[in-house]
Image (cartoon, rainbow, N blue to C red; front, side):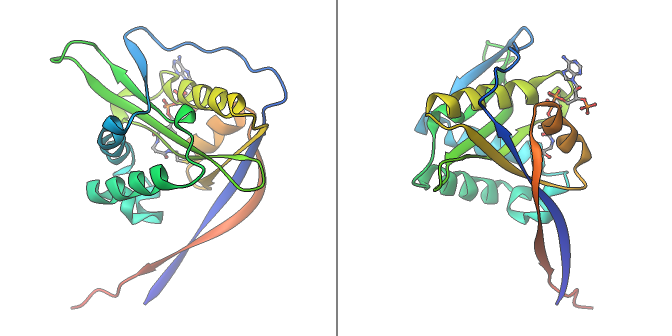
Amino acid sequence: MESTYFKRFRMEVDLGAARRPVSLPSDYRFVPWTEAVLDLHARTKFRSFRDEIDSVVFPCLGNLEGCRRLMREIRNKPGFLPQTTWLLAHGSSPETLQWCGTIQGIAERGGSGMIQNIGVVPGHRGLGLGTCLIERSLEGFRAHGLRRVALEVTAENSGAVRLYQRLGFRRIRTVYKVVDEAPVVA
Ligand SMILES: CC(C)(COP(=O)(O)OP(=O)(O)OC[C@H]1O[C@@H](n2cnc3c(N)ncnc32)[C@H](O)[C@@H]1OP(=O)(O)O)[C@@H](O)C(=O)NCCC(=O)NCCS
C-alpha cells in the first residue's frame, strides 16, 4: 500500500485584541445551530469540499455519507460549541433559498477553541463569506470565555492559508497527515 504525506499547518489566533467588524453581503443570513440543521451542515460541507484538496486528505469529505458521519462526530464531541457553529443561507423564499456556508467549533481540553471545518460552496466564494463565518464563530468562542482559537489547514490550500493569515491566525506547528492509498488491482 502506498502512502502520501500531506503537510498541514496548525494555526492559532489570540482573541485578546479587538477585531474588525464585518457584515454579511445583502441577502445572506446566519442560521444558528439546532439539531434540525445537522443534515444541512453535512450537505453544505459536502458541496464545499468535494472537489477540493481536503477531500483527498480526508476522503470522508468527498462523499455525503462521510460528511454526515463527520457532522455527527463533531456534534457528539464533549466540547462541541453550538454558538461557534453556523450555517449561511442565501435568499429567503423556498424557491430561491440556497445553503452556502458552514463552520463548526469545539472547545479543546487545555482551554483553547478549535475550528473544525469551514466551507463556502463554489458559487458563493470571494464575497467575504468565509471571513464572516470565521468572525461569527470567533465571537462564539469569545463568548464561551476562550482566548485562543486554532485550526488546521493543508499547506497547499494557499487561498485558505492566506485568508487565515489575513484574519490574524499564525502558524504555530507543522503536522503531517498520512493517507494510505489502496493499490489499484489490474
Ligand atoms: C477557504 C474558503 C472557506 C474561503 O471562503 P470565501 O467565502 O471565498 O472567503 P472570503 O471571500 O472571505 O475570502 C477569500 C478571498 O476573497 C477576497 N474577499 C474578501 N471579501 C471580499 C469581498 N467583499 N468581495 C470580493 N472579494 C473578497 C479575500 O480578499 C480573499 O482573497 P485572497 O484569496 O486574496 O485572500 C472557501 O474557498 C472554501 O470553502 N474552500 C474549500 C473548502 C476549504 O478548503 N476549506 C478550508 C479548509 S481548512
